[in-house]
Length: 210
Length: 209
Image 1 (cartoon, rainbow over the protein chains, first blue to last red):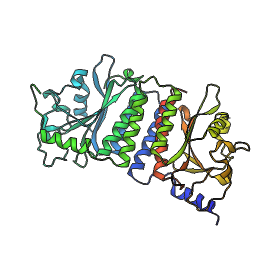
Image 2 (cartoon, rainbow over the protein chains, first blue to last red):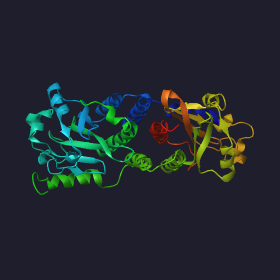
Image 3 (cartoon, each protein chain N blue to C red):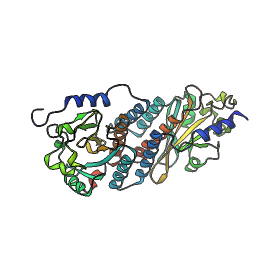
Image 4 (cartoon, rainbow over the protein chains, first blue to last red):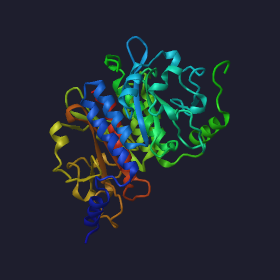
């Protein structure tokens, strides 16, 4: 058999389209997401598609995306994981740009330029927001191990526009494993947030609240 | 903190150690590098040409390929090479003189490529994936046609093409990579990364072309 025939066999068999591992599976899903989003006109549909993928591909039970409205205030637009009752309260929450970066009411740890961890021990919420949590009765549960993820913990990953202004954020909470997400997971969502920001920034203010 | 809530210093230290320090895996490096690429091209008044050039340089940096060529559809509807990295002067000049029609872009008869991964085509040198007279578009035209000794070799004339797909699934451009550092077929993971990067780049280019 000539070498080129064998080369063809290698290419067909070892470079087939089916994902071989979790990383390829995520890449494949994001390629599909990007492909659909290019021709999608509705920002809301793009957000829902992105959120569904983050919810499916990674460990988070509760995921949401908030966007900055025309009035400059941030409101949650789409979420997955919360009960209808919690969702109603969640969609009523309004943050000013100052709130978003306010370490007094919402103490956080910036682990990268665009990612902040809010840990339950620091009570990163206002008292009237407790009802928007998925499992509010567990909000005071103690963390047994440093890498546990407990009710009350959440992560915000900023979505920025072409001018690098924050126009929204992913909010991620409650991992299925009950452990903090891996570093890979955070890098993935950061990248998806960057792409989303480039894609929607010109149309972000067109989305209606809740 | 002047009022309100105190941070748990131990937990904060743990988070910083877990997420912000230590060496990164290859996957983390690629994800971080790709995000940094897109952050860099945002808001800098970048032109289409500069974005394509930076993209070609970035692909060369993270992949095993020595040569990266990128082309896009122009206003007249024809496709031309726009960014070339790793080519000698003659090959680059020859490539810049070529244009393709949209029919050419969809024509897979020439070179009979093998579809690999998700959206890539592998062109084998033995199938002569170039028109007569275009031998000078390669860095080493004198090596074209020399039979492959081993099936896992990547030889002069082999290349991988990844399409850039825009709105309504139209081809808006392409990425072509060739010449691996060790002269072997590229790793599957690298090709998947190039496909992934191409899809992300298409998001940006689709609004510019």
